[in-house]
Amino acid sequence: MSGTEKDYHSWFKRPELFLPQWVMGYAVEARRGLLKEWHYTGSSFQILSIDVADDVVRRGEVDSFQIGISILDTDRLGDALANPPEPDVNLAASVVESHHWVVGVEEYPPEFEDSFRFGRMRSVPINKFAEQIKAIVQNENFFLISHGPDKSLSFLRSCGVHFEAIETIDTERAVHKFFKVPPDKVEIKRELIKEMGVPCQDPDLAGNAAHFTLRILLKVVCGDVDQHPQKEGVPVHKWSLLLQRIVGSPSKKRKLRRMRTSPVDSSE
Image 1: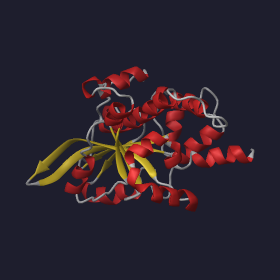
Image 2: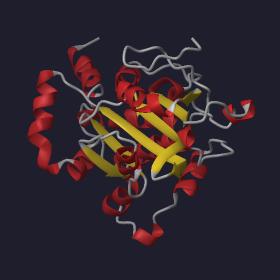
Image 3: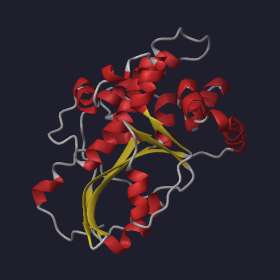
Image 4: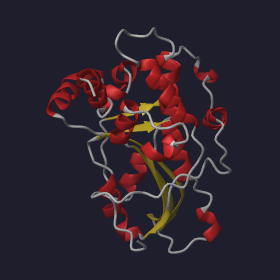
């Protein structure tokens, strides 16, 4: 691998360099010094989406809920962009790690598992939830991606989990700002998912919804890249084609690899 290729590979392991400048300029205009410091010190951060549904409150406290957490694995994305995998490889299953947790409910119907199309569904005791989500989300070290105003962080605070994102990137607002699309013409999430051509009977299920939000981000990124001329020596359009593969990858029940930061699963 040439020195230039190595540079490209390292770029895509840094979300601040993976996301096109328009995203970073929109989200973190006041924090460029910090991003520059992270780049030179080799630090990185997470890009993730969180979706919450079916919350039940009793006596003023959250009793149960469902939560989807989807994390873009920038290390694996960097590997794929440096060495594009074979066409039959499901890229979304490789680079996006998605969770659906049923919190505060000990059992759920086995067929309910099949409705989550992108990973494993798990039951998490309410008294273990804070510990387990903190094991996979790096507080104060992540970009939160939403489509529309985010409500997940305020909900988590009501559960005693106080996360602070570096910044929240609202792809709905980004489409309006960067593609000059009037707010009333920005496509709703279900329409964007339909355009991807990825069959999913329940796209609103928390785990599916969080996963699709990250695909929407990549779809918007591709749209922006394709509007700009090719830069000499930087194969951004080749990268765009690979990102399009991720956006259009069929659903797959990814078996999550064990990581040091993953919550313990007693079933394994």
